[in-house]
Length: 186
Image (cartoon, rainbow, N blue to C red; front, side, top):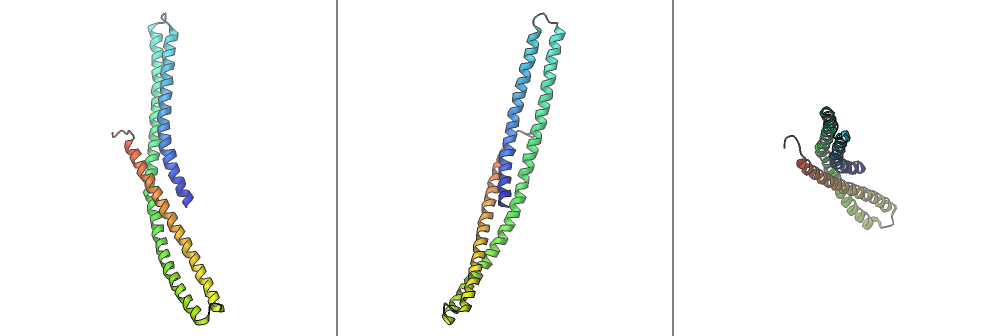
């Protein structure tokens, strides 16, 4: 799950906002190229051209520019919608991770209490039967297994906490960027 959440953060920030700004730049470049082409077409007609031919060349260039602009708007809208959707999904992921985090914290607390109790019982067994008795050795294995389980759960809790912080940061960044993007409501 950690890899998935890291990937979500990267996709949302790098691909979402990066693609959006990249698409804006690409659209602007395409329009500049189309405008330059229209100017070249008009210039190639020269001074001897009929007004109709000049008008036709200008209209052709403007039509092409209009189509490119419409394509750019649709592309940007799609990218904006995708960024908005991914940003709206982050709180759901945060909630899932928060629930898992609370469950792991509960397990951690239970394992901690169990481990402390087992350690106290081990001390009692050692004082009663001696440190080298078979019962004490077997119980030491039980305590060691509980300790491993406790440490593993502790690592999982820390990992979940890190993932939640990362998603909160990603969410905050994307919300700011979405708020700064031009929309038809602006």
